[in-house]
Length: 568
Image 1 (cartoon, rainbow, N blue to C red):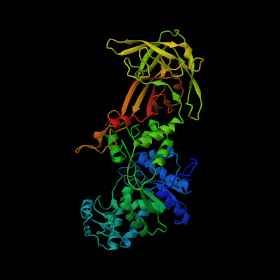
Image 2 (image 1 turned 30 degrees about the vertical axis):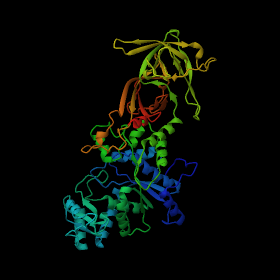
Image 3 (image 1 turned 120 degrees about the vertical axis):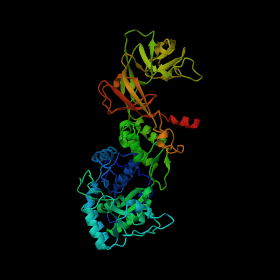
Image 4 (image 1 turned 180 degrees about the horizontal axis):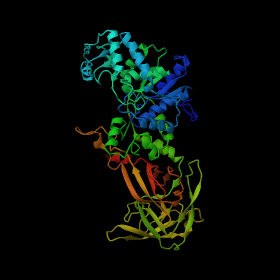
């Protein structure tokens, strides 16, 4: 089977593609089990749009007892690389899927060339001496037919001779191309004698070296590769709808029995980001992000480094479903899937991102208590406790104190009481400032009768805040990652600007000296937590090291953008 993860306990709702596949199975249309494939071009890293396609193709194979191949559509020697192949395989496996076969379009070059010769012999293809620019110009418009090439009526023998000489490397790049001979007045412009093969003399292909001189174009290689592999349903996004006719024409003319059928579905358009390889490449190459695995990137590598779990991505893909029409998806739906997944899985810890010192003036100097803390809240089906040190000097978050608080501010303020999480009730007695007027210390008293879990722990106060023991806390770097763009549609910018004008300057805020409780010291790199009242975090798998803790914020506890959007 294509996926080793357990099947869901309840049947998932069937979308229009699954309905078609179910009908295929019921009628035995293809005479074989459903066969799908995920066919990325190895010219970059996979992103969330690919994740949707991965979940769809592998999911259908799993649900209907079929197979799913991983095929690399590697027909462009100038942009593809083995490093992308390895990255893609790593991402698909990380998402939880196992492919039934691993294939490469470049391994089909000989077979594709044989098909090309067959088309030429039967008068279905010809060698054109026009430049690609001339071919584009002479293709016509949606309202006017194209102009036939002056070489369109060469004999099959002439075309076969020229094609073989192209393959032998006799001609320079751009001197000749092979075109299908269909209809220059066809209402679908894709069918106006599309290009099939072009010369790339001496080009170095990462798998074929420099031995191959004529490379197939996408339309020629894609459908025929599906047919060679016995794929039943070719699942493509809507931009390939017009290409369906050439897909069907080629597999039919090549003589495949029971050929695959292409189905189109809406691609993923996700708010506050871009899912175009060209745009993602600009972000990387121009230094707007730190690389393909920058945690702000919508790449699988970036999401993995940020701390998102594959379960959340699969849930998100199932939640948004498969549609027939393009529509933007709110990023809040994805963030909800991430929170919902992490909430049930990760332990709670105390961390103070913007620390200010608290001194408990009536707490015995030198005394240290060990307080019991719950790892999970009561509504999570996991259990566990830990002990955390409590001492005379603490850190609380600066945002949890106001010297002149507004009404209904239930955190710490002069003369006001709050409960320390898992600890005691404290009261602020004095505020200490430096020469610049900045608060540097809060002097408080604690009520020793109010220890959490003690006999008098039920004394009520309106606020509870988090803290860490100052002598025991670990210093750490915290990276607060946020949405990469300031607006839902990054392309919606004033005339004369491009999507980069919508970049969010606060998509990364680095806190150099935050404080976290000492219990995290022994945890392996890549451990995820909920920092209570703050958000979900993971130790960075690249930059964390012994003695240097670096935490990435995966997602906040709530959608902090909702309020900002209402303001706007």
